[in-house]
Image 1: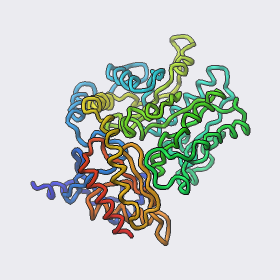
Image 2: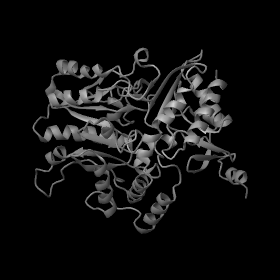
Image 3: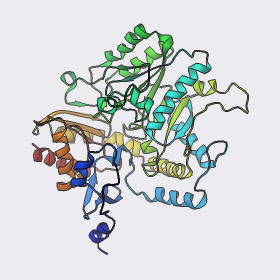
Image 4: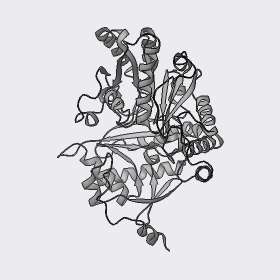
Length: 446
């Protein structure tokens, strides 16, 4: 059977039943972007084309697609132990994976709580923060602080501390007692920047203003992304994260880094905390931990936070929280195999080496039609396009369609922002191919 006929055989003839997430369903179903296979740097479409993946799936396939060691590990695990209850029982792979993840984290963050997604990880971290203060006799610390344009998943907690308006505005009050720091992005001050922008460290001082409004003894935690990815690739300004850490320390506030996107090599290190030399109290992770092959997320927790829960009778549950699929055996098998690939192929170091290559290549698109800003950080880049008359996001939508259907490239479109986040296995020649294709897409939607 030829690739095209094989692809056609698995293309559904009815798209109505599936209500797709974060998708314009009616527009998609008029002109579907369907994939049926993937390998290394490419997807295979339902009409048999190879499409270069400039998005690492959705920030998650950092080691490329269908890597043999990962698929083999999942198959072996499924044939050996398909499921184990995570409440009151355990299996060896969960403990091994937790140990290896903790070893990648900054010193002092030695405990890992597993869940199944970045959304669950954010809600878990917020609940741990509240429980920690309660365990220490400071139960009045219930206020949670996020940031404008922040994304922390779609649970009620993560949506509440998140700061993307369309994710929030139709869902009511969400959680009470939530506030938001200002976004760190200012195009006038930061336009066309490689790496961390020079301007913006002072924006961390807004936390002092919030302490002045609410009182330090009411604030439990601050959660921020070292690089805000889902909102369009907004790197933290130089000095911003250390400043935020110092203010949190001053007032006894926990600092949570949401590293669902930045973890596992995206910024050239195991975690962005290492890149910036800032040790948070908790780190959330997901996506790259299993290379996207099986859903998994989690929270890495500072020792003092974990130990605060371990003070009651030994037979009593310390934290009344968890998920049926926490530390699922197949996810743990995928995670262990993924970490092996990262280490054996030096993919974190590879991302560091390729960072200037991607940045230089993307900057050649400065001056292309309707490009109003370019940002690069790690193995990630974003290009803001001027909105088209008729509504924000129309040009970005056209670019998404043009890239997939006409130029054989998959990228992320966030409104009118095009985000490039290729797998860490990308070659220099493939970076050139990606940027060349993006240039053609930009001109096609001019």
